[in-house]
Each structure stands twice: as C-alpha cells, then as structure tokens.
Amino acid sequence: MTADTVRWGVVATGGIASAFTADLIDLPDAEVVAVASRSQESAKAFAERFGISRAYGDLNALAQDEDIDVVYVATPHTAHRAAAGLCLAAGRNVLCEKPFTLNVREAAELVALAREHGRFLMEAMWMYCNPLVRRLKALVDDGAIGEVRTVQADFGLAGPFPPSHRLRNPELGGGALLDLGVYPVSFAQLLLGEPSDIAARAVLSEEGVDLQTGALLSWESGALGSVHCSIVGGTATSASVTGSKGRIDIPDGFFFPDRFVLHRDGRDTEEFTADPADGPRNSLRHEAAEVMRAVRAGETESPLVPLDGTLAVMRTLDAIRDRVGVRYPGETPDEDLTAELTPA
Image (tube, rainbow, N blue to C red; front, side):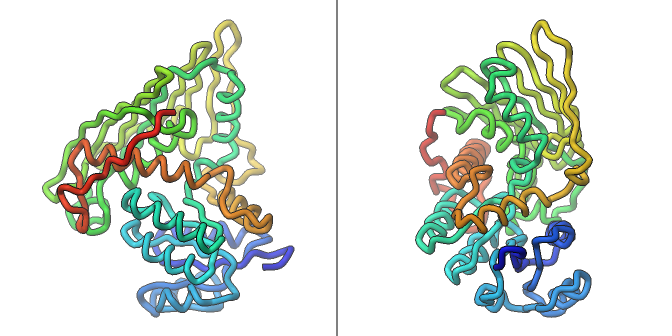
C-alpha cells in the first residue's frame, strides 16, 4: 500500500464480485491486483475482463500474496468463514460480503481471528456507508423526529426461483432471511441497536429454507420494528421511521435510496435527495472508500460498520431462524442459535 493506492484482491467471480470490481476500477486510489476462484478458467476470464494481472485458481495463493492490502470476499455466505478466515490468518485485511457468515458462532470466530492478528475486518453492509442513509441516521440521532417509536422495512423479490437456485439451496444458506432480510434487520438496528425481544413467523419451502419471513422486534425503550423479506413476492423495498415528533419515509430502495421524505409536526415536508456527485445510487464505491480510509489510518474496524454491530445483527438473524425453524447443513436440530439478546 502506498499513500496513493490501496491494492485489492477479489475472491469469487460472480455478479456481486463483478459489480464491486467495476466500482473499484473507477476509484483513482484503488487497484485490483488479483482475483481467485475455485476454477482457474473462471479466474482468468474475470482477470481478462477487468484487466487484473494475477488470476489464481487457489484461494490460498491469493491469501499469501503480500502485494494485496485488502481482500474482498464475495463467495456464497456458507464459504465466508473459511475464505475470510484463511485471508485473515495470512495477514490480509478483509471486506466480507453480507450476510457476514452463516451464523453468529462463525461471525464471532472471524472477529476473534481479526483481533488476534491485528487485521482490519468489515462486513460489506454498503447501506451503512451510503451518504443518504448516513444523513437519515444523523437526523434521527439529532432528534429530528423525536424519540423513535417504530421502524418498518421490507425487501422481497418476485421469483419464482427453482429449488436448484442458490436462494432455495440449503447447502448455500438459501432462503429470504439471510440474503434479503439482513437489510431490513440491519436498517432497524442502525437506528435502534440490538432488540431485547423477537417474534417471528415464516413460510418454509420443501427444502427447509424460508420463502418469506416476518419479524416483530422490540426494544426496552418501547420501540417496535416490523421487518419482512420474501423470495416469492416483489415488495416496495420501502422503509419508514416514526418518532414522537415526526416521520421519515423512504419510498423505495431503502438500502440504496435516491431520496427520503421528512415529516415534522408543525413544519413543511422536506425532501432529501442523493447528490449526483456521489455516483449512481447502486454504487458500491462508498464502502470501498471507507475500507481504504480505515486501512490507511491503521484502524482494524470501521466506525460506520463496527464489528460489534455486525455480531448483533447476526444474533438477531439467528434468533429469527430459531423461531421459524430454519437449520442449515452442519447445524444440528438441537443447536442453540439463540445467543442471549442484549437489550438496547
């Protein structure tokens, strides 16, 4: 790493890896120097597509590459623990896609490994780094709508997805909750912290993954959160935060919004819109920039996406899965997924 350039390695060659790499290339202070895949042919094709100099058909080779400052892990989440752990143990800094891991046990292992080796680690929760989401959080924290009473958020895809699709494959951690529900849960916890109580219901597929899930989150303050996710119905992907003195609405795309509307009692409605200078609304550049800022500063985690917050979200996801009866291969039916919830 130099004062001007942070060198990246990319693990996996799927859609999200392609989107992130494309945004990295647009950043003047980022350089993608290597890619790894289970297939040498896939890695080579990805490298040629993006002008990357090194293509590895072996993750260990990339992890050992000392020219890499940060590794971006974009495998299916069932492989996050192994891939991110290998890179951390080799001394690499890591940005790991969401959901961070399959469960909180694996997440805690990665956090402990990062801290043991003094390496930077962050979940790729790009929503937390989005400038407009950060503006919304600042308004809520400053009391613009008073004390938060309710948070609502939803994320659903219409499908239909066949049983062989990764979203329905238990071997790949399929289901609506981990892939989509992580966003509504993370949005609620961004504003209110970890809930003190959780109720949930789900419709399960024949394979045993959740086709749609709804959860009611409760906090000691009296606030409630309603979150919903689905892979059998396209939702508005809207969100709303209601307080004692007003409300904020995100009409659509709450995790990468182009606008939100602030309603304050006794005042005119205000609309906040994304700055065109921040790039396309689906840009992943903001999380990449935050990683590079933190790594240059010698930080081992980001204040925007703190590791304790990631662990808290994983505890909530585990608790919801426990209530609806979703277990993945390797998790025994009697395994306790419900780590004690910490009241906010």
